[in-house]
Amino acid sequence: MTFLKIKNLVFLLTIPLGFGLATWFGLNAESYSKPSRFVRFHYHISPETLFFPTFSMMENLALSRWKPGKTIVIIAGNSILNGYGQNETDLWSLRLQDELGERYAVVNLSFRGALPFEGGMLVAESLQRRGLPVVLVTNTSPGTVGRVAGETYGYLYYDALYKQRLYSHPARSANILEWEKTASKTVREQQTELRLGSLLDSWFHFQGLWHHISYRYFSTTWNQRTRLKFWQSRDKYSDDLPVAPGYEQRFQSDLSSELEITRGFSINLAELDAKAGWKLLQPPMEIAGDLIEDMIPKPIRARTIVLLSQNAPIYRSKLTSSERDRDESVFKGYAALWESYGFTCKIVGEDFVNQDFYDRSHLSATGGSKLAHLVADYVRHLTRP
Amino acid sequence: MIPSLLRQSGALALRALLGLAIGIFAHYLLYRFFLPVQPFIYVAF
Image (cartoon, rainbow over all chains, first blue to last red; front, side, top):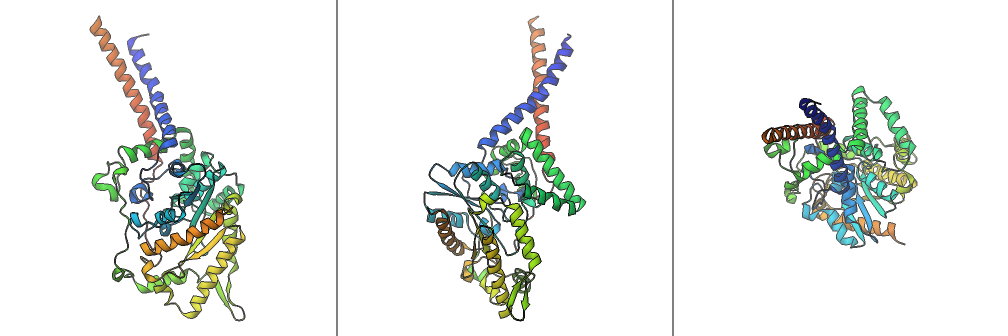
């Protein structure tokens, strides 16, 4: 064999070797990689900056706080539970940890704009499947259930699914496939790409490796928020989510549009019956019930607390008396619906004052403390022997 | 003789490093390919 042939052979053999090494590092990274000093997913470790925390990263966060004898309290849900409006040190989930004490390990895996069962729920499901004691806390508004796939954080479902971390729940995959058939061509293509990406990732572990490198060493993704130092590793960034200003500066947004949103919580979910008062409309309620049944495996339901978050009183007080009655009927009706499927469901924020809110829906530090106190009671009640 | 052996070893090591780098880069490309082009834009409401 000539030297030229040997050189070419070495070159050709080391290409798959390099790829294999990267895959091996990725597989390893999946077993330990997680954000350090983690409190919540802030902008720089979230999809807002093209950083898509992997399922294993989220699972590692929960596992790193657990030890035998502890119950893991996983917080999923949206920006309200993400503490949008609260300083990192005042975050409600830190107060929840203080209230619950050492027997519990609280980990806030909520994301801004997430549906109740995206992301965090899947981590709770995976840990429960492994036999760990878990409580899941999530939130939503009446009528909103959503799917585990199809929106921003849907990638986590495929990530967990292809890495075989979830319960076998055929109704869930059937529902998603059925929904895809009715979706637009673009959405179908996106879903196919997500599935393909997750399938390949379950073999080659590229998300685990390159997200770990991006977090720990250097980043290669440019975006508006990190444009000035886009190469900087994400662990160098601090939490700069908005914090509620002084009370006088809050609630400055357009009143009519905020009232529209407040009304929107119940306007399409109930109709006035001359005899019985506000009656819940069945098609939306049936759809919500079907989604609950299909999306959430039964074993996790008994360990899940669903919070229905109320709007700030400054807006609710401006509704007519009839609209307030409708709002109350809808919140109570949907809380009963969740309970009928085996969840613990609580309406929160009804007795909070305006100072407890940062804006119409998000809580300030005082609201966060109140929420922590309430949720601590619910968690203790759910886990009592 | 020795300089020629050194040269050949150097050339082989260079090829090996280049191959490894291409393999790792292909792995990185998979990550980039499945990353959305636009970041998620959250609007608080």
